[in-house]
Length: 305
Image (cartoon, rainbow, N blue to C red; front, side, top):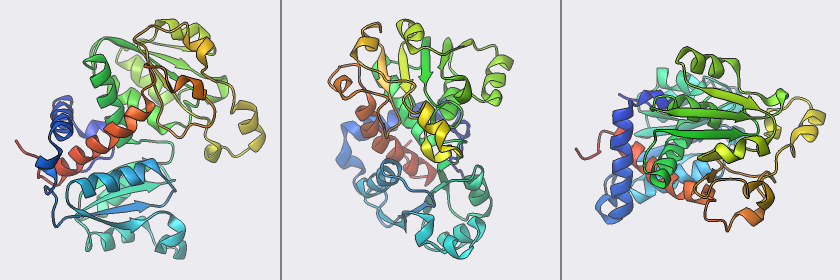
């Protein structure tokens, strides 16, 4: 039984098969309309979510399956003190596959250890968010024609942003990748990510000013400063508007530098950017459903050869 806890749970070759499957699903949706008929997805969201939960649920419904679950820990038995291990044991009696989001790092790995069904990590604290990474990779792949030989800038909250941690670890497996980390000192990329890149001789630089980095980028991945990860509200207020991408800053970017964002945004991308052809963050949402459909089908062992 295979789980999706980190992007590394799929090899580069397996990822390419998954992306090709997502391509085929986009081109021939009716072909897969009953692929998961009789199957149930459990969405176990101990932490609130809009896009990730609804995207997983839409993916399963598009495949002809059904959905059960809960939208927050407060309406589950976790509020009574039930452990993640016991929750997933119970859910394994009801569903065929589960997507779990939890505020604690490693919770999805614990669930997988005790689960009788495939587990998808839909975000565990500030650690990993692999399905977001898969849709990010698919978006880049479709826009740039591949996943090799490019410079990727990641801007904003790099300390707590699980989406950027996952994306860097995934993109590091492709040839000719270079990273630019754009953040204030307080929100720098964690050492374990930087050390991994050094150990693998993958070039990266760290800068504070977005204006200094944007001319060299093929992809700019913006992130919000996450209020829910801060213990001190004063620090959040001081840093939340540190980066705002507007037309003036974007004017220095290349014509084929695409702007990505995991969403939700809270002001770090000005609405005036939305109509720019390089703005790809809502396209990411569309690819998110397709990639999650492909992941569900693959983990259930129902993907066509």
